[in-house]
Image (cartoon, rainbow, N blue to C red; front, side):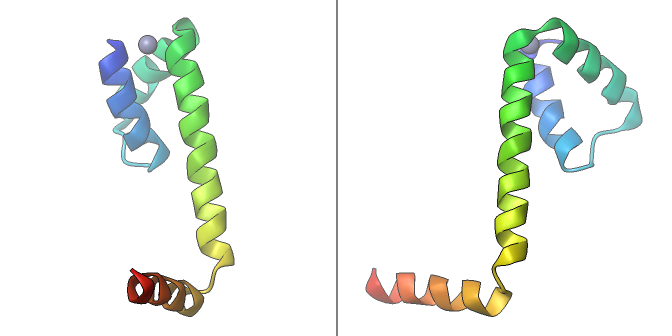
Length: 73
Ligand SMILES: [Zn+2]
């Protein structure tokens, strides 16, 4: 697996869409490649952050926030 492949696969992995046959090669690559491992951890943290932020904000609050941004644009 190349670094490019690994970057593509890790997004699918984090969103739960990566096929089982790609998981082992991806994990092996992350073990062997510090750059991809670092990128993977950053992406994972970012996703967790976004997910938490989304679950904290009520949809209606989010909607009115977006509307006020658009109104002021
Ligand atoms: Zn790599």
